Length: 163
Image 1 (cartoon, helix red, strand yellow):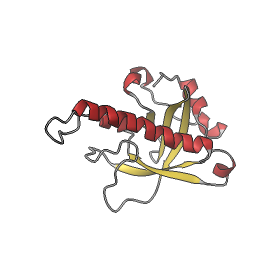
Image 2 (cartoon, helix red, strand yellow):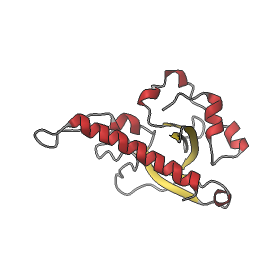
Image 3 (cartoon, one colour):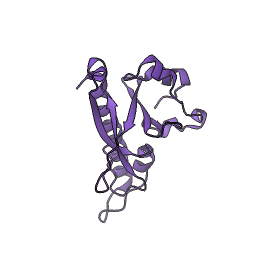
Image 4 (cartoon, helix red, strand yellow):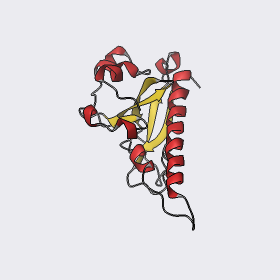
């Protein structure tokens, strides 16, 4: 992912009003972010923990979404829709995002199950256990990284493009 400044982050949000953009608490540790190992930028709001932010790179542009954690809790341990890790060391929650444009202004949302603190990039980079003799763990990890990027891109694209 390309490095992002605070100004680019604020400008990237497509499902937010100007007022909402102005009130976003941007991460304070942007200079320390390992951009080459980030498939997307995601964080929780420090003052409103039920709010999350995600920025993905689409067609060379940063595209951001404001997400809200749903009030409902899963009855069983769900799997993250983005990293699809079955051995997660963290919680998974349901986030919803307003659609872009008129649909979003009417209250239409789309939901997705995501790692609670957006740990997906770290999760997919762990070497998976060996499934069988000769199993290529590095290739499996690379496939998981590609899959994460595709899943995040598809989710953000669907909101941006109104699908």
